[in-house]
Length: 438
Image 1 (cartoon, rainbow, N blue to C red):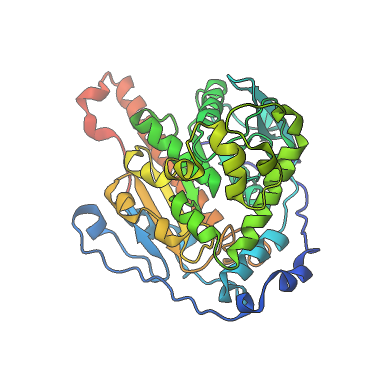
Image 2: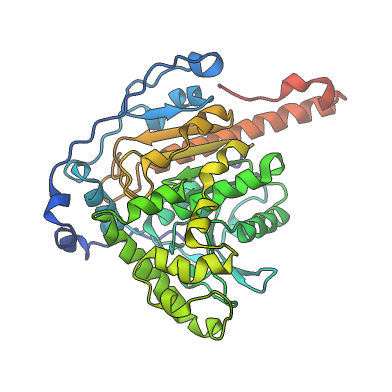
């Protein structure tokens, strides 16, 4: 594994966006401001057999943890302390979600944009840390970041994860979906929860440029759904060395049901406005489209469902918006994942409902691991040493998990090289691959 290097000049002083903090109270109804006690999900002793039954427990019981390799988490320094959400914010999931969205600090990083041409002539925008092509060794591990719906490299949670990985000597790139983060749109087609073609091209491009590197990916929200679907499609042919999924809606039918309830309508309208804003910048590309497109409905959408009905589901060949949600859920992909995958969810996430988590499939897949926090909201996780304005609580866990996988890869490579030098074939010593604690 490449050694950690000092933070380079592209990383400037972190800036904070406090201007929206006073608006929090006005954005929340009285009901949302009330104290709603959230009970911690206890980590019950395993009653299973084999690896999971033998797993060493964490020194506390504030997290729900499941998966065959749960034992490795007991050695993570980032999980030694109990999960404690920041006071006041933890009282309500909407307060935590909105507080994080408006007041989390935004690390200043100089980025270099690279645009790829997709087979359909669409444009894919990749944002790399400026200067890393010269500052890092060619075999440095690569981390691809996939933001949530309408998100990109200018989002706070993305920047914090980028900064942490880069400080560890990792090469980091943000995959901006079409139209996001001011990326160009060159065809009448954006992106969807089901479409993995652009991600597949990006991974192939990165592997071609850095053939000596192990490549990993981490996605949030819709980006996590796309990532997990990709893993399931690739099965045992997946070229990634590991992945992390955060606040994944998993079951889009359930997520859509909850999206129209109570205060969730605020998020629905906000995301619809973000989608229509992107659409209107490129509206001329959609003029004169024939078939089932309802361009006025998409352009004036007041809900995400309206936008998907008018444009997204038609662009990607679905019969209806319900057909689109039903057949784009990454919950169906978990059973086919063949590389190490860590899923982190918040039990009180208003946008990625806990009841949509495919717990049984995660437990049944030896490659998957699940952590569910009692609080966190959506893209919030205002807890840990850097709360309330610093990185999400999840960042240290994500990084420790990825470094564990990278060290595992390095150990396996060194052992294989050693035996090759001794003239021992890998086939003759199948037990030599190091798998670490399981």
